[in-house]
Image (cartoon, rainbow, N blue to C red; front, side, top):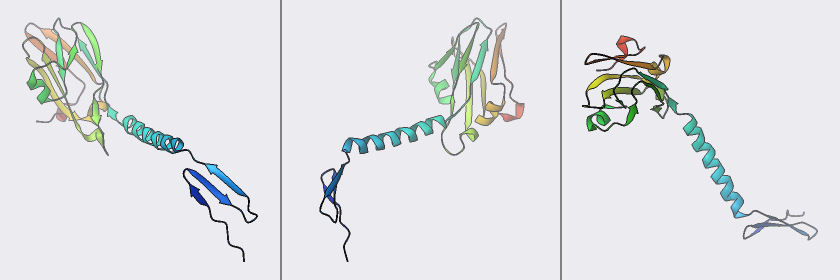
Length: 160
């Protein structure tokens, strides 16, 4: 009974000896293995970024004042204007809802202040999916010293 030829490894080369005594070899460069691993990691990472839930907000600032937009109370309390909404202009922002199994269920806050003086004129938090299901447009108007911000969310979606 003939035994099957056994492959022998020599470095990054695989050598096989046949029953007739001839040898065949195949080279597997290490660079190919590295590239395959790198491509696999990049594809997986891209899939994670593409899976990110986000909302596209449009701010229609009909006032002469610069407005600041914040995604949370901590940023607003710091008093540094993270995102500016220019006077008499429409501005769009795309905040992310988060990552994970159900990012659409995570809370997303929208806080607006007047840049000069930091007066808070809008503060609302709702699940990301509620924002996604709404019109996502904020209209900012001024009547005298008062600012009026309208949105399309139902009134019972805000959190305390």
